[in-house]
Structures are given as structure tokens and as C-alpha cells.
Image (cartoon, rainbow, N blue to C red; front, side):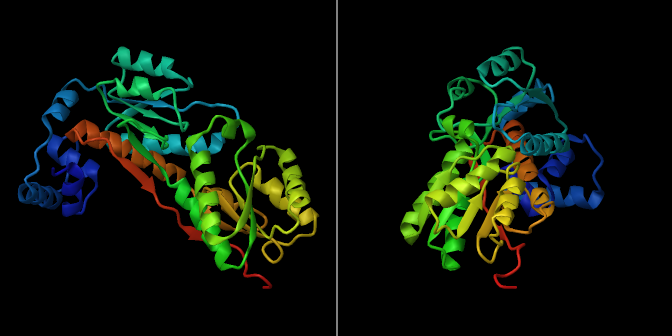
Length: 331
């Protein structure tokens, strides 16, 4: 089935531009309109009937559930929220922010016909909200990837691939003992999807590469520095660390410095964090960048495709890339 995304690609424009050209909601240049018209004709694109029906009763509002649970990094959450809001605005939609952490707020928004679609964040591997979301007659997109999505659309960063990439990077550098300093204990206890997937990719890749690894919960407070001491007390031969805890990262690096362990000469550090966090560090480290705002934009795009053309639910994971920010060892 030809989708609006196919038309946008063929015409070399954004999905929202195709939408505006078809609806007349915004003025589009003649040249762009003609290019879009040609793409529609050549591809034989036809808007889905159910999508047209949904659009006819549109509220032009997307419900966004962003629970502020213990242990979550509020800064990263708000970057994703910003992305959803930016993407939604590009499609002519506003967002209704829901901060509850269960189905109650979702049910109220859906049953009251307050929203055309729902985007749900902080997804757990076995999330209790999935049953309710699966029963709805409107698009629902998860920012996260549960163990069984149950036919729901999912958008996220590929944390499992990031864990694998980190191990492969360290193995290529010759490291044989690596520690993962990750999310706070409460996040791990909830089996938050991203934390489970990162750990799985990290440990599975290590087993395949013959690298010894350990996983350590890490609080998002200055007390995180104690985790560094615990790691070396338990595993004195650790020579590399993957850190996925944006708020704890500066404290962890400071503790390494206090111990006289130079980064990256004596301890290689790879941080999994948004690029803006990496740029503020006093000690530059290599990073796997989490494109938090891009995740939100992608979620809004998936919602729009489901609303505008009845696109089926899909899973979209943004692949990880590694950015070298530290000096070479010995430099």
C-alpha cells in the first residue's frame, strides 16, 4: 500500500508538506504543489477511508502521557516531550500533556473524545497499560518497546543495539573487563523498557565477544560517586565503563579524577546520553548520543501517518551512532 511517506519521499518534501498540499491548510509554492501532484499520480496514492473518517471528527489534539516517576531523568523526558510537541505542531496538532502513570488519565482523555491519538512514554517491558491501549479505536504510539507490543506502534532509540555497540567498541580497543553504570535501582526494578533492552544488548554482546562485564545500578545524585568505588572494589581489573545515567555522569567522572584514574588513558568511558549533556562535561568522553528530541518527532510522525492515511502500527527504532569526543589514549 502506498503511504503518504512514500509520496513525501518521491516528491523530496516532508510528510507535513504533502498533508498541507492536499488539505490546503497552508500555502505551498506552485513548483512544490506540482511535484507532489506528480508523485501522487505516479504512485497512485489514495488516502485511507478510515483515516478520512477520523480526520472529519478531529480534535487536532494528541494526548501525551509523560509520567514523572521516581528515578526518571526529567531533562531527557522533556526533550522527548518537546520533540512530540514540535512534530505535532508541524502536522497542525497540539498536545494534551498527561502526567498520570497508569491507564486512568488515558481512559479519561480517550473516553471523553478529547484527543485523536495517544502517545505513551516511560514504557515498561511488561506494561499494564497495554491492554487498555489495545482496546481503543484510535492511534496509540508507545515511546518504548515492551516485550510484547501487542500490535501497538512503537518508536524509540535502539537501546539494545547501543549496548552491543558499546561492547564492540571496547572489545576493539582491547578491553576485557567492562562495567555498565546504569539507571537508578527504582528504574531497573520497574523493568523500564530502555533499561532492560540496554542491559540485554550489553550482556549478550559481551558473552559473544568473550568480555567480562558487570551491571551496577546508579543513583542520579552526588552519591553516585560511591558506585565507582564499589565497582573497583568488586572488580579491580575494570578498564572501561559504559555510563547511562545523565545526572550521575559528572559525579562519576569527578570520582574517577579524585581516584587518580585518568580518562581515557587508564579508564575508557563511553557515555550514553543526549549530545547537549556530553558538550557540558569538563572531561570529554566518547558518547553514544541519545537523540531524545528526534524520538519525540518520530513518534508524532507515526501518529500523523496513522491518522492521515490509516497506516498500520509499526516499530521504528533509531539506530545508535558512536561519537569520538575524548583524546586518544596517551595523547
